[in-house]
Length: 370
Image 1: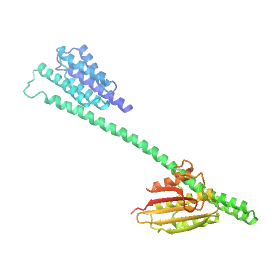
Image 2 (image 1 turned 120 degrees about the vertical axis):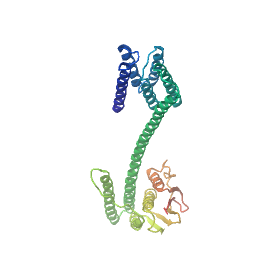
Image 3 (image 1 turned 30 degrees about the horizontal axis):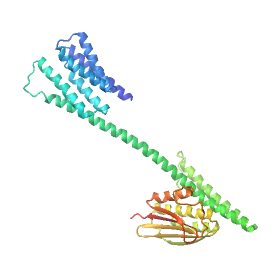
Image 4 (image 1 turned 45 degrees about the horizontal axis):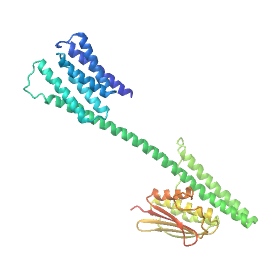
C-alpha cells in the first residue's frame, strides 16, 4: 500500500512539472501563469485520481481534452496526461479494456489534430498512427499489468488455502497417529485387565499388572516422542513407523492381550513403505476395535500382495457390536475415520461390514506402486 501511494505521488509530481514546463516554458503557446497553473494542477489531479476515483479521472481528462481547443489554446503535455490516466485506470480497475481503448484513442486523436492545426504541422503523415500507437502502449500495458496483478492475487490466495489445508492435514495426521498409539495399547490393557477380573486369581492379576505396566509405558513413550517431534525448537529424530516386518511382534502382543490371532500373510517386504505403514495402522486399529467391542476371542488377519494392490482383511467371530457402522464415522468414532484416511492416503479404499464368521469384517485395498 505504501509503495502504491509513493508511485501515485511520483507520477503526479512528474505530470505537474512536465505540464508546467510545456505550457509556461520557452515556446509555450498563448499561456500565462494563471491558466498554466490551473491546467497543470488539473492534469496532475487527473493522474492522482486515476488510482483512486477512475471515473472522475476519466471525466477530468475528457474536460481537459475538449476545453483546450475551445479556449483556442495549446497544451503540449496533454498526450502524457492521457497516456498516464489510460494506463492507470486500465491497470487498477475492471472497466472494459475496449471502452478504455476507445476513450484513449479519441482523446489522443483530438489532441494530436488540434496540435497539428495550432503549430501548423503537416497532415501528410496519417495522424491516426500516433494516437493508435500511444493507445496500444498505454491500454495494452495496463491490461497486461491488470492480468499480472490478478494472477499474483490468485497465487497468494491459493498459497493461503494450501497453507491452511496443509496445517489441517497435519493436524489430522497427528491426531490419527496419537489415536492409533493410544487405541492400540490402551485397548490391550483394558481387555487384559477385564480378563484378569473375570478369572479372579492372583496369577492373572499379577500377569495383567505386568502387561498393563509394560504396554502403558510403551504408549506413553510413543506419545511423548510424537509431542517432542512437534517441538520445532529441538531436532528430534523420527522413529521408524511399523511395517509388515513388525507384524509377528504385533500379533504376539495381541495374543498376550487375550486375542487369538490366525494370520495368513503372503505379502513380500518389497511393498512400498508408505503402503506397509498404512496397512499396519489399519491392522492395529481393526484389531484394537475387536478388543474393545469383542474382548478376548478369535481374530483372522489376511495380508495378501496381489498384482496391483495389497489386500488387508481383519475379521472376528462376534458378537456384532451395534456401535460399529460403516467407515463414515457416523457412529463408529474416530477409529473408523482414521482407517479410511489411512487407506485413502495411499490411493486405496476401505470397506466395513458384517463377516460370515459372526463378527465384523474390515477390508482394505491399497494400490502397490509399480
